[in-house]
Length: 145
Image (cartoon, rainbow, N blue to C red; front, side):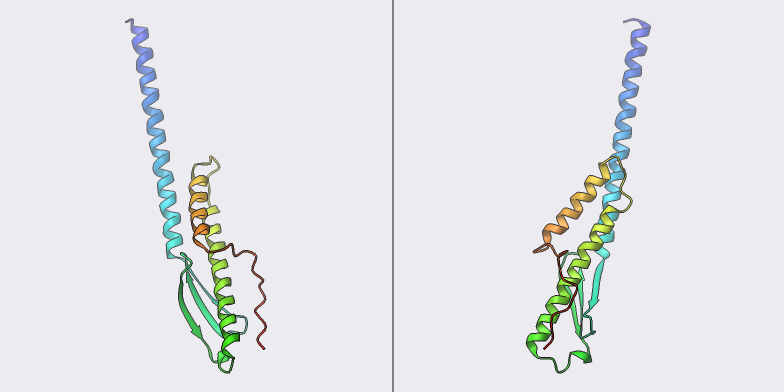
């Protein structure tokens, strides 16, 4: 093997090592980005009052209802209207959770597609966890007769 051939092989080996080191660094960056998004999502919840402040609900990022509070304005409402209002408020809070997850998973996405794919995977997993897409909800509360 000639000296120039050895040098060529060494150069190719060095280039391969540098490429692998760059790929490892990019993968670590993607993992850190995914962990940061996941931590932000896990810490997030939404509390929402009904329009006339009869009911306040809290929904976790998982879509689970974690709290319901009724105010004095709910006194005197019939049970059907109060149940309907509660469910509408829960759906609105869940839609807000989905919106916030979308915002978290689309913020600071690098254009090379790597973190964008991770963000899209996280976003899609949360959207699948909800029973139905909620972006179509009418912002008007139910009629309280």
